Length: 425
Image (cartoon, rainbow, N blue to C red):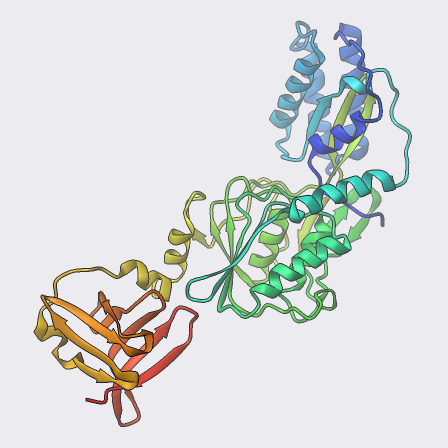
């Protein structure tokens, strides 16, 4: 079957507008209003993913026409906005769109063309300049990976290289956070590319079904397409009410396969792939022609959104996110650490010298460590919990630990590693 692409209607209409710079003046008359509604109704019945709902929309539009709801509207932009509202009233669908494009008003429906290499090249160059919508790939304290991207662009070789590089950077982390809170969708082919890094074997995720053509594009991940990058760590996907379309595609797949936990707000609830239908007189409808289906759940997320496993406000900072997800992590413990006076008796058992010459002592009601390994620098310890302290920007220490018959303390490093230091005197 032909490649199915989810895209933002505003972008697709803008590309069409570039073909004809001259705009025509259109005034809505009763005759033109009826022609447009009749044409739109036929297009809905012919193309909309669910024929019964297309009939409902058609009946509603003609009912509005009969009631005179459009009789006082002369401006085509205002008319398009009203039609869009009425379509959503009759059948809510986030991918449904109806626009007026003045540059198309002098033209009939554009002829069907194959791919335009020049437009593809310009679009790809624009996406490259925007780093293919990837805005962050970093390692948070505690060896937690964090990757943020705001769209699923077409999986061109350069785009795939960027995805691979981002995930290669975080492949050795203990957990991974993927931030889709500002991701508004894009290509389902890129969704499958991104998902492929998380499954060691081909895995069925979300199918795309075109009822009118009795056609199904089965959604399989492809671990051979990841250049050897395989991510096995726990995964957390951040969502918001603005997470939509292809971003929900990935979110739903991760949740349905139990490969990742969803954290944040319920997503927008738009799953239907959409294509433009040119109606003449400058009007273009974005009509959803397919729906998704997940074999693991037997359903999709249209209208309901993806319900998070862990509820969290979309504006939560990364500090709040990590503290929620990893309440006992190095980073969370760093946030808990506090300064304050200390009773000498409470740390008496910890005082003395440890491997490397680290010397712990109390002075003026505070707990200190002199570290020869850092040039004799003195650090004031910050309290986390009994026997547990923040030593410096890299290390937390827990006293009273045993390694065999040897007493000492554990060093918990910010990179997730742990070491032991024996008490020598």
